[in-house]
Image 1 (cartoon, rainbow, N blue to C red):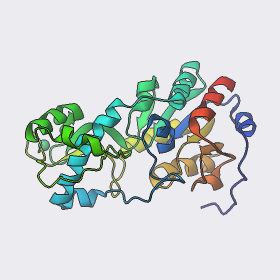
Image 2 (cartoon, protein in one colour):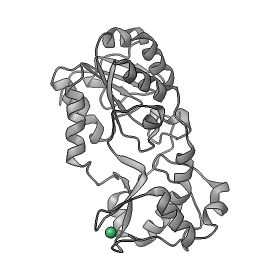
Image 3 (cartoon, rainbow, N blue to C red):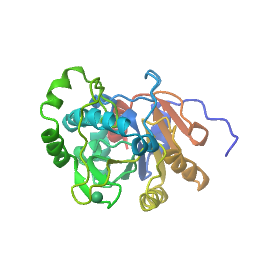
Length: 278
Ligand SMILES: [Zn+2]
């Protein structure tokens, strides 16, 4: 760990100065998707929330049933969300050659939807489900059909009282009768193909992300407070290998001490400004 103090928050002009003429890799977090209507539970104005852990999911049948009931409602909301100006700006920068690619901590696929091609979905994707026994992967929409058959009318009944979370949760009160689907191949336990707390990101994915950071002239962090190690490690790696780091986030982050420039601002407007300036 470096014990240097973080640089004071800079301006958009500082950010453009630093990034001008450099090929970027971008690391994005929940803040990039808030303008698409997906709340950031770690943002400065966000309610405290205990994220579910992998151990809770696998170890507690009641909890798992509750999770799937909520997810069965919530994933449809994520499915309907649209990319915002920030996502579109990054896709534009990739087309123009100023951006190598995106490493995202989001599971909402909005970068892909906006037209980004070189995207590493670090924490997985909401539209896939994996069997923990035989590793068969099925699409979330296929599972939705099965869950609808097992729980007729459920999603429609509860949709009026929905609060959406970044991992496609939706608050549902009555979940005790929800019927969970098992793997159609082996009967094993199904889990969204999302990295939960208590799980590690697959090594191959981490290696690809390091390679994308190494290939860039600068690392730009957008909309992440870098609370979890899985994202912070790329910032530390960049700083240690002499790659400048810039951070755009509405609040302070755990990575500020590694950054050359930090900008406290929203990502939609900042990334749009960067796409116009770089
Ligand atoms: Zn299976």
